[in-house]
Image (cartoon, rainbow, N blue to C red; front, side, top):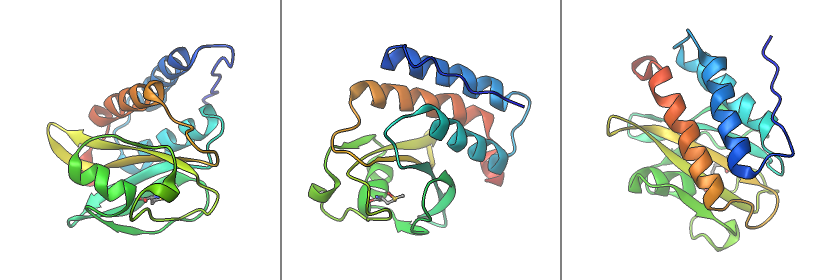
Length: 165
Ligand code: SME
């Protein structure tokens, strides 16, 4: 059993540091893509407050396909360049969207989502997918969330056998 205990009195940066450490220990000795992405999504859902969806889209055959996640059932395929996920993937840069209704082409999977952050997953310069986190309130994510989630993806990338993802 792996108990997740993120101290709620910590600062945002402190909480993300604990999450990165928890992820390291959760994935230790395992490289199976499905198992590790599933646990990484579950750890995020347990650790982040004010979030209604978190998970992964994986690059398959030139488009993003839904991977392990926590939240309501979501759209399965997102072409590169479309929606927040496809745009972050195509640009290979993190997108922080304070109001999804103002993002042209935003793809609504959960009507409750009001703000969103998408971090591209790059392994040695090769695009593997994205991490997507949605919140039911506007402007939920700031630069500390960007730094924390980019770090989370950095911890994840070398611990997954992407050729079998
Ligand atoms: N809103 C995303 C689609 C994925 S869901 O939020 C889970 C987008 O615009 O790409």
